[in-house]
Length: 461
Ligand SMILES: Cc1ncc(COP(=O)(O)O)c(C=O)c1O
Image (cartoon, rainbow, N blue to C red):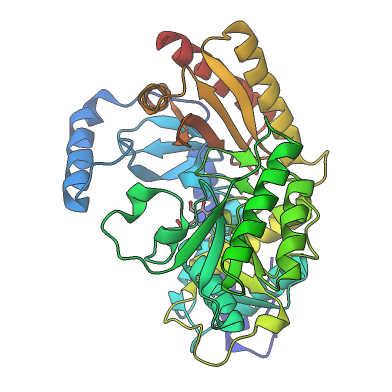
């Protein structure tokens, strides 16, 4: 396909040069040929076992902490399958904690990365952005109906920028509202918002946060009343002191707990009455439910003032309404993202919007139903070994055994050894979670993984 640049530009001549096009198609052809050899889980190659162990050791030492999994990728994969440096091929059902939604070595992303590699700059930023940045923020604002979009390099920075916008607008309000067990990132400010004392151990207090209990599906409506009462209590205790409330609409790190439309609208109506900015932290949920944004899935469009995205979007972003445009200088940075991630981001978001992912019959929800049915069948066969399924859309989880961290962690390791990569989430219980590479899998892949889950579960009982 020709590069869509005005033909008068030298860049158009360059990107559409026959040599460039030929080189690109040869590279993609070579990749596709090699990928044919990647079709199922493979054990490690015996001759690479010792060198691999040395690499893992060296990585942990240089980083200062051991790796969670002995995972060092080689640089090639095929959809949900990925090759590691020991020659093993594994099913990646966590996709870098939610990054590789279209799978490994996706041809469209590789093609856009080739364009990025021959582009003039590796990094883009506020003083030097290419047309790619504009294309991306147009896509995001049109798909979300927000007015503005500020790109950045991580989910945490997208949330930092969201908090700044909210504080700036609501000055001198200085408190934040968040949910129990929420996760927002690990900067100094966000380590206070994230409801996990271990993540802020030894760090100075940077912001006052009041926590509201999240929706509890076991209590139903009672939990809506409980949260609304807690919110009213804080608003009364600290009048006009709250700048924003951060909503994680499906708690991710907390253990894959979704709220409901009624739960969110009840709280959001109270917040609107008090003019408190509503932030939807979609760093983990973006692209994974029945709509592109999870706030659209729960029909909260009219309430949300700011939404943040990351992970599968590659380039992270803070989307916001006109009324929140800050004075000069509040938001800036050297890098907004790399050219590779900006171009890849557009490829991914277009693919989400043009593919058949959304709606109740879209791929995200179909994969959820299929995986949930498989896990339900496992829990009927092994009622003492597995509870669940939990989660929504391309976020699927279950509680193994008694839900203790140790037993769940052991199962995650056993699954890794058997060729399935997952991760854990939540405390009391700790769950096994999957962030499905929905763009790269079929129900048959879920069947293969479910059989492996059953074997690993039974082995650990
Ligand atoms: C809901 C949520 N917000 C923010 C973040 C932080 O994103 P990052 O790790 O890119 O800084 C995460 C990461 O897991 C997340 O799940």
